[in-house]
Amino acid sequence: MGEIKVSPDYNWFRSTVPLKKIIVDDDDSKIWSLYDAGPRNIRCPLIFLPPVSGTADVFFRQILALTGWGYRVIALQYPVYWDHLEFCDGFRKLLDHLQLDKVHLFGASLGGFLAQKFAEYTHKSPRVHSLILCNSFSDTSIFNQTWTANSFWLMPSFMLKKIVLGNFSSGPVDPMMADAIDFMVDRLESLGQSELASRLTLNCQNSYVEPHKIRDIPVTIMDVFDQSALSTEAKEEMYKLYPNARRAHLKTGGNFPYLCRSAEIHLLQFHGTKYAAIDPSMVSAEELEVQKGSLGVSQEEQ
Image (cartoon, rainbow, N blue to C red; front, side, top):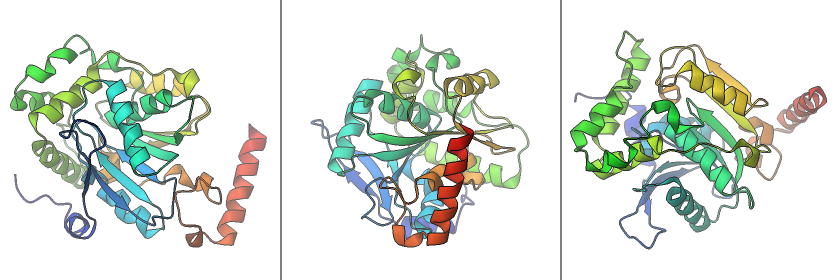
């Protein structure tokens, strides 16, 4: 693998933002890796959850940009969990450890599905204030691999990587997307057999989101019009599931729009509230007035 072309921003990010490792389970082998950047006084940060092939640093562009604007951002890498309930329990313990009562979640692909499952898991005592779902899905059956989900743990690493790489774009792409794919291949190579096997198991294990349990959570759906691993049917199902969701459609971006396209994230709507992920000192009075005005208009429209 040659030099990845996301430098120098990526190299600068790695040298300035420390990677933390946290254990919250009784099993010491289950280690959460995370980048926590931005003002610590923010108690409702934005947390990024990666796709099957991703590590915590795939969101480095978002971390650099958003912390520069005053947001607190946390990007995660999961330990090895083999079912959704186990993941949700571990994630709840992590939030308890970080002393975070409520959070905004940005999930890419599998990360988006896990974000929805966690919101569903905590619906009686809500921990999720909003969701941003990027190229995500609501039902694992769309991959037609629920019957193989319980056998991933037996497969060697090279076979698991081949399965994941099969979903990457293979046709002609623009230079930014090509760099994003190269970077994600590099990140994929850094994952061990158990990490990949467990993620593919979570991705394909028979499960679906129960929307009535999370209907009160603000949702933004981010997807792309060009080629991605997500079928048109899966996208349409997400729109039906969240009819009131904001939609951020990107003309291009493939499987990794968070790497190769800058997108406005929906956190503006929470400025001036206790669930803002941004330092209040970074928001001008004029911006707050504009935001209150736009929220008033949108509420009247509803």
